[in-house]
Length: 390
Ligand SMILES: C[S@@+](CC[C@H](N)C(=O)[O-])C[C@H]1O[C@@H](n2cnc3c(N)ncnc32)[C@H](O)[C@@H]1O
Image 1 (tube, protein in one colour):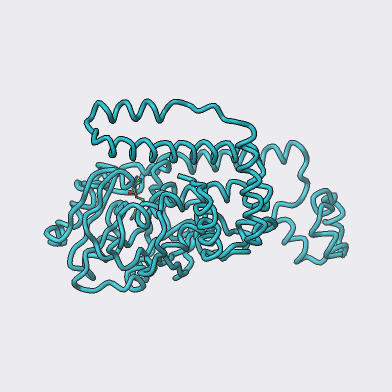
Image 2 (cartoon, rainbow, N blue to C red):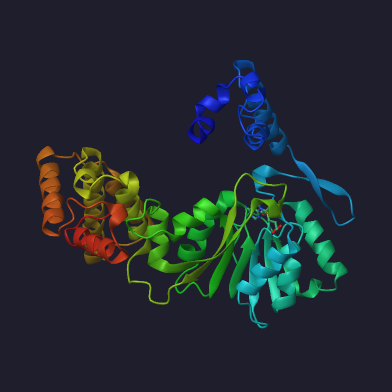
């Protein structure tokens, strides 16, 4: 009976059968009724769907939830990820788990109206916040001034992806989820080496956090996880319910701590990033299959040719003792001239790559199952053969 009720049959069971005394226990009838499983006729289904769409539209509308520095309400924009964390226990917990020292400068991305900022100011020496929305900048300034803490807060108005960050010890933030991936890439790969901060404690969309935490071989393991593993360790600190935000988002969140590694392998980061882009372009294909694609071989061939030619030309220029800007222009033009790619050279390169993958035991392996060390070894094999990705 249970099976029948939990499946499709429950959707089409005539109401009078359910109402017939003794046909079903009362508890089951009320459970079914409360889950709206009864009588989902076409019209009813349409109405339910319509209701869902209306709910989505309602959710997408800006919400009057925050107040500006003068106490006037203003709308929150979903497109800017403006979901304000309102649960004080969760906010306190984030600050506690971020391991802030009294001497620290904390970078906060997207302070919003300052719920987290005021707590960070209690724990740190100073806070530098980057906020894109003027209204939020005013709101957080107003709030912090009321508490007399304005001397220890600097708010940079701008896009966190485009703004140069000042020096900081920790990053602690409830970020707009739309910029998670480029922001983490910026923190780990664009600030130079060593990146100079101890950790980034970030609230992220739960599914995104799971991917960051994935290990090689896990179904969620992807290029982002492979890149982050090269430069950092990631740990899950806690999950946070969507109910703790206003307006309530569609997804739950997780707090993670990302700690830059002090022993990042000596590899050209641009070359590594381009290499993982190629390897993870079809993450479930074997490396043999990925590097048999003609398009990939042509790309690698052209890049290697271009690189080789640029080096040769530079050497020749240096030998001639010529190196002024006109010659630089000429060099650019000459290097930029597209070489006629020769079919036999291409097939030589393809054979070389396939042979190298075979010899290294990589041909039948999938990139999503390789450890950082294995990926680094593979990149080294390519580079040794003169194949460059960047
Ligand atoms: C999820 S809310 C967090 C607000 C606040 N920190 C909290 O915990 O309630 C994200 C904030 O980031 C801001 N924001 C969105 N995109 C941004 C960007 N590219 N750079 C800087 N701030 C951004 C939004 O205006 C918003 O205030």
